[in-house]
Each structure stands twice: as structure tokens, then as C-alpha cells.
Image (cartoon, rainbow over all chains, first blue to last red; front, top):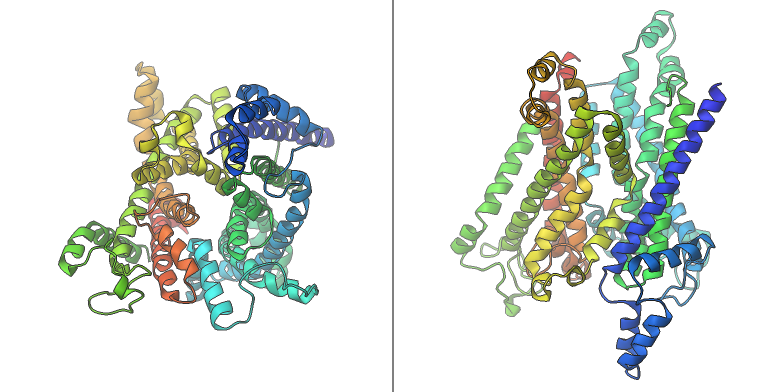
Length: 322
Length: 282
């Protein structure tokens, strides 16, 4: 009974996500059509031998003279067959460019997520166990500060201090030319990961603290205390597990903002990931590339939200789903 | 902390308002170029020194603050209005209206906002039928950024307002009003809206900080406030290329953004504690 309800819920949510993705693909397509210039105009500008008659012929050839709905339908039909067109800047199929970028971004975000969790969990728990103490206020102050730092400025400051002044870490890029060692790549990731993590450490600490304080007020914690269990057992076996339920949800839901952070971080450090790809292709009028990378980003966020919903239902048997 | 934040913010707002006066008193102009006096360090005549064109950094900061705070406040209010317009009907009518509106809200929350804002900011307004002269005016970048951030920033208020509307709908005074034959719009505006004001206030205060962050990053990327109008974000765009020659140029605007955003977040937090009866019980 429970199994089928859960399955039905999952399928319904999955279907909703697919619909949202299709709607988004149309919206993004329509907005992209409003961006300056169009591919043929750019071709005309860069090639003086093209006459306006040639341009019109090319537009007809590529279907650019057709109405938006028609163009979208054509794009959609190729897209479902896995053909997302060519990238104008890279002169290669857009999907081919996207995949390695996706891997780089995954590395960056995963490293930042791990770092945030390692720091935010103990700090948040400590804060919740000593509420309204001086340390708690200090932690809260620093966490709010972390949330409030403009990511691009943080990146600039880190570059000034650690690359320009101290020279400890490279100011950008993926690896030094001619040096393909893992250590070199890791050195290039230090500053981007710190930049991306500061904000998530801040918000995650606040969530862990709030969730933990909420849990510690429950009767079963008092019961556990009354049974004579040690504080350690209570905190780690009883409280933390329950506090993790909202934290996991928030974590998955914050995926979208983490991605926005990744876009800024990657742009600042010339880290070749999805975020920089999106930014560069929008700025460079690379329509196919921008469209497919934006859609992939949206899909990733939708999947993580879906995962959050399902994890929530799975972690907490008390949740009833429609 | 909230009190201190309030003081800091008031000081910032005052300074921003006083920018033209300060400009007059100092005898300098925030946009006057002085190429013989580039990268000057702090001095009594240039409090924070000068930038790569010899412009006074302090005066530019004041003007930038004017723009950033203006964008922050206006966008927050606009976003709150959008949020109220979505949230109150959703909570009040319930049923399929609620389901549909909240589905939309959840979807907007789930989207990767920054990439979306970037394409919205890159839209060519002439293709929407706006006169080219008007579409490329720097002033328009101000209105455009307010509008696009508000378009994605209404979700928190909408959810909060929907929640309060949902619970208020069952309260006796609303039921009494319904039984007296009050119209839907009267109940929504006269009863539900005034009683949801405190969560709206908290959410709006907290959102100002976020909006200033978004504005600054878009301006920094060259997609927000366009020069010659200074904003803390676009002041950093130039500073980025000069981090070897003049690192301090990158420090000041960022510090201003950071201080303002921290202050708004503390103020919002403080308001929340002050207005939330649950917080007192602890």
C-alpha cells in the first residue's frame, strides 16, 4: 500500500518536472529570440562578400524566416532526438562541448558541498547546543556574514590576497600549461572551492542550528535524558538524525543558488564549467550553446528538487504524500 | 545587532541622499575626469583616493550607494506587491487556484535564477518594439534591472502571504465579514492584507539584501546598471582589471555592498524575532 502510494507520487512528480522542463525550454527559446542580432546577421557582419540577398537566402535555408512557434517545434523535434545543434563559438556539436564542462562543474560543486557539510554540521550542532551563548552569537554573526558576501567580490579579494600578494594559489584557469598532475589541478581548485563554499557554509550552519534546536525541544529527547543516556548518545543517535531531515531538503533545494554561485565563481576564476559556458555563450551570441546549457542547468536543478521531495518522504515516514 | 544595523543603514541612506550636497561641499564632481591625478591615495581632498580616470572614489561610492539602495528598495517593494498579488488569492480562495499559483511559485523558486537573469538582462529591447534611442539610454538599465529582479524575486513573499491568508480565512472576524456579505476584494484588502503585514515586512527587509547582491553581480558582469551611472557593482568591473595597480579600488565598493547586505540581513532577523510571538516563548 505504502509502496504504491510512494511510486505514484514519484511518477506524478517526475511527470510534473518534465512538463516544467518543456515549458522552460519554450520560454528560454522565446527569450533567446529577443537577444541582440541573429546568427545570419553575425555571419553577414564578419563576411563582406555576403550580400543581403545571400543573407535572406541563408535565413530561408536555416528556417529563420519562419515564425517562432515553427522554429521552436523544429528545434524541439531535433532536441528529443539528441541533436542540439552546433555551437557557433566552438564550431562543434553543442552537446560535445557541454559534457566535459558538466563534469568540471560537478567536481567544483561536489567539493564545495563536502567542505560545507564538514564545517557546517559540527558548527551548527555546537551552536544549537549552546544557544544564546557568546560563541553562538559569534557563529551566527559569521554565518550571516558568509551569506551576505558578494561572491564575485569575495573571489576578487581572494585573488588579491592569495595570488597577487602571497602567490600561494593561481588566480584562475584549470591547470598550468604542460603540467597535468593532479596536485596542479587541485591547486587551481582551492580558491574557487573556498569562494563557492563561504555562502553555503553560512546558510547551512543556520539551518543545522535551527533544525537541531527544534529537535532538542521534543519530548523524546527529554525521555532519552530521563533514561540517563549520555549527551553524546542523545545528540548523535537521536537528535542529529531527525535534524538531518530538514537539512537534507534544504541542501537539495539550495542546488539552484549553488549553481548561480558556481556561475560567478567559474567566471571569476576562468574555471571551465557549465556556469562559465552559459555566461560566455549568452554574451557571445552562441544561441544553440546557451539554450542547451541553460536547459541542462534547469534540468539538474529540477532533478535535485525532485530528489529533495522524494528523500523527504523517504527519510521521514511521518510525511504523508498526496 | 539589529539596532546597530538600523543605524548603519540610516547613515548609508542619509549619505546617499546627501551625495549631491557632499559633492558641492568638497568642490569635486563624481564624474569629472582628472587624468593628472590618477590612482591618488587617500587624502583630505579625496577621502578614498581616485580611480583610473582620476575620479573621486568616495563621491562615486556615494552615488553608487544611491543607485544600489534605490534599486534595492524599489525592487523589494515591487517584488512584495507581486508576491501579495499571487499569495493572497492563493490562500484566500484555496482549491485549484491555490494549487495552480503555488505550483508556479515552486517552479520559479526551483529555477537557476542567475542564468535566467543574465538572459533577461541581455534581451534586446528594440526587438520588443522600443525606440532604439530609448532602449540604449543608461537610465533604462535602472528600470530594467528593477523589473527583472522583481519578476523572479516575489516567491518568498507569495508563500508567506499565502500561509497567513490560509489561516486568517478561518478566523472569526473574516467569517463574520463574509456573513455580512463583504466582497472578496474587500476581505482580501481590508482584513487579510493588514493582518499579514508583519511577515511581509520581514521577508521584504531580508530580500533587500539579496536584491542588492543580485544587482551588484549583474552590474559587475556588465548587464545591470550601465556606466556612466555608477553602482557599487559596475565600479568593481573596472577595479577587477586593476587589481595589480590599485587593489584598494576593488576593496571599497565590495565592502560597501557587504556592509549594506549584512545590515539588512541583521535588521530582517531582528524584525523577525521582534514580530514573531513564537520567538518570545523560547
